[in-house]
Image (cartoon, rainbow, N blue to C red; front, side):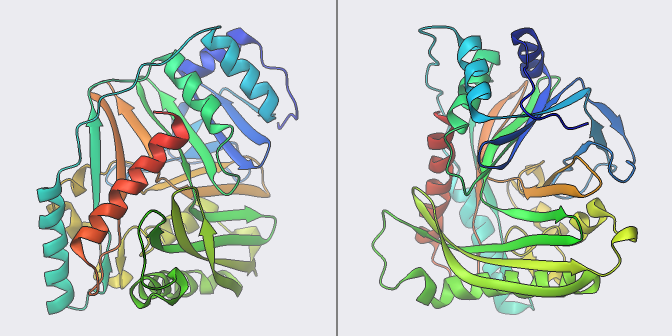
Length: 360
């Protein structure tokens, strides 16, 4: 079903902006999905399908089947976006309501109390900036155009239909299948480049602890699928942030019975967006301010496009919208050594990075 360098007509691109999805799987390679999408409770192995549940898995399992599917390059996607916008078109800036510090402080204190009194080692709360404005098709085309030049280390992704959508560029891979090989990563531990640090990110004990909890969780979770290898940690250098990253691979031993989306559900959430230890459970976080309303933020965001290829991202660094408005979220890992002001600053810079890459 995959077609390389397909010529997409402007009228079809207009329909795509009404109901569509996209994924940059590697530099200069975009999967473009045209809607309207059909919802289904199950998919066959190798069937082209999208999967994007809510973070707390509250809704029934649902996959989305596109009407058509193409593979295109940067130049064609840019031409389509620029042609739709028209010469001289511009997008006015969006007014954002700031994230609520007191709500975050309550969540921060509640998590630290659990860490001090219980077996919890880490949890990740999120906060949101909100706007009453919703992107129209012209804004959406402008955002996609900006994302074409996003750093190559980021996975650009998006899905929208019936006035509800998500569009962003995440650095975090949950799981990727290439033949009999699975790939994932531990991405946790962050420095804000603008801040002066007393030690390097690699040497910071708090950030290394946060990172190592994610590594150990993934190794334990994937171990039943096959032989594991890991590389890292190393520094992922983004325009405004530094992250610790460890790449992990798994050679499948029983690939004929492997269910990619079931494996994604098994991995979600790693301690990079959830809790550590995993057995502590994460549903309790819904009791904290804003956490029950995460919706798809930090959830698995997956696409299967052939029997041998599938990819699932962690849906962070994005813009979300619905008829009620738009929002940008950010999360941070709280451990015993965390400092409130530094975590709040990190949350702000993560949201700023989303605005920068989208051109908001």
